[in-house]
Length: 187
Length: 187
DNA sequence: TTCATAACAGAACATATTGTTCTTTAAGTA
DNA sequence: TACTTAAAGAACAATATGTTCTGTTATGAA
Image 1 (cartoon, helix red, strand yellow):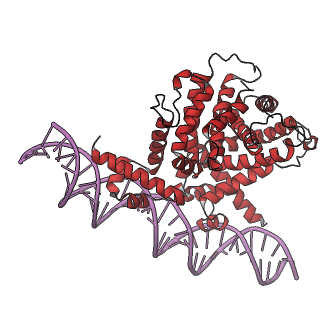
Image 2 (cartoon, rainbow over the protein chains, first blue to last red):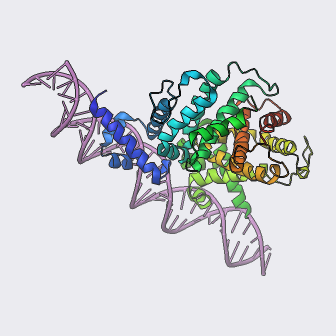
Image 3 (cartoon, rainbow over the protein chains, first blue to last red):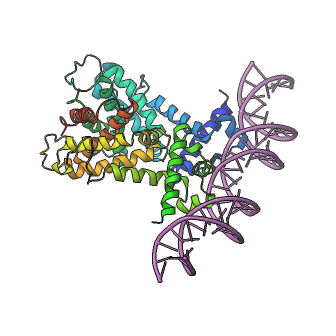
């Protein structure tokens, strides 16, 4: 990818993030974005067909990182994802989320947060299906499997939203405990 | 309220619902709504300052009904809300939701479903705080109260979304069981 | 039934936003 | 250096928004 392309892409992402702090998604115009980013109108449309595509790609890039299954050496925690322990996995993800705290809160609270949440739910859904639902013999026979998975991933999204609402006061480890406390008795 | 006002208001609501089936919220124009509703442009803006206000008021009206604490005699179920039994309350709400099934699914799946969900969550949050969190001595001392309430109400919204996604196949009683199955062990 | 009031229709309007097309300039790559 | 490709900038049509008129019609009260 051309260096210029990366630069404009970054500039647009940054401008968009900055604007999302004060204005709401639907009220931000393409004009404002390109003014803030200092790029030409043509350039914007060359990168993103619509404003929605911009939001979509921003979400995708963020989650691609947060849910990446090969974490580099982290300064604050060095658990390996390979262990497969649910609590560890969750803690790992929460650390990544906290790194992107500001962007997260912007995307989750902007009035198009629904798109963001859908992504979030979807990524975590996949993770739950893969890692946390094997080997666990089901105690709960009342509810169907797919509902249970949906419940777990939905609860995680909710938890993170609650965490963000409270300015991420608690450390990731504690949040992971909360998650486990409401999920463990059910599976 | 003037009979003419009610009539136009109804016409606009109906037209909006009808359009939401095939087109997505943000792509629907005011022009399309007033064409479908057969009302003048001026009239629309006299009722709703913006398209968002229309969506907002539609949601509010719907939930006002669904969460109304004085249910009339229902043909399918005649539990009283006064009993205070959580499962009964939930079942009651689910019946109301099913009545408005089509409108619900439209609002929940349209790309501005976030607003709708926020309303939903908010209403149920209030209900949980009032009815389901009194007298229950907390077994779970790990998680804070406000998180627990948030978790419960969030889980209900999730459950309903899952129900809608599955074409509301299961009867409300069964859905209430699912809810209880994932919530009861936690409280 | 009459009558004042308020809601509505319809057209015309300014304004703003979108997305495209062109040419020219500058940066990156081989 | 020379070729290629991205970006800037201006100008454009097309469309949507929200407002302001004027005239008409339905409604509820006297």
